[in-house]
Image 1 (spheres, one colour):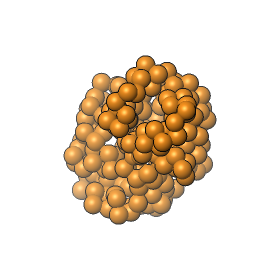
Image 2 (cartoon, rainbow, N blue to C red):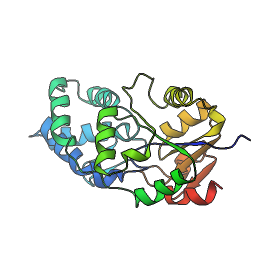
Image 3 (tube, helix red, strand yellow):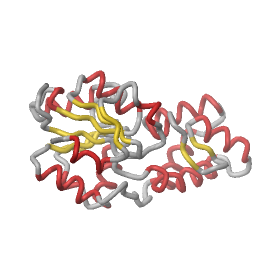
Image 4 (cartoon, helix red, strand yellow):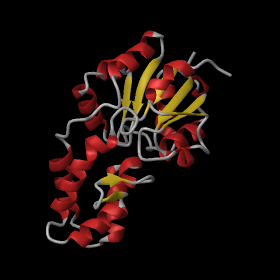
Length: 230
């Protein structure tokens, strides 16, 4: 097996606590979309994998796993009268200024991995701009050699293209890369790219049972990486 030289991280649920960072904004977002009908808000939430009654995201959520366009498609299927312009403007109002909550001491964990010589990258189905902004807010942007979003020129996860694009940029074979993520989209992308290690973390909504079929390793969160990457 090739030596692992680079570590690719999903962002939300892997580096950032998804519930703490996004659930408050999601509730406000749904109220912007449908201010006067709680039943439609509930249906829209469930369509994209958000339980409005409990205020939490569900495993397999399109909002967690997919792009903003995936979320729109799911909501439109449940509520064809959805105003698309309002969808995007409300999303900007409710999500752009949210403060990301780190999963752990990211500077310590990622700094240790970088000091060991690994190339670090982020591959997310959020936009590149928003990912860059959130990593800057967490004061960890400088630890990453690359940040790739759904709009960075490659087909987004679960396609392998973002991983393969990273490999091409850094002259790496996929077998020299580990993909680390909390969702089936992350692990499907790693599997199809044929990465050297496909590592699941249980710090997002998905369970061990959801992720086990694609994962080479399953960790509680990224703090376990140091011990398994020796």
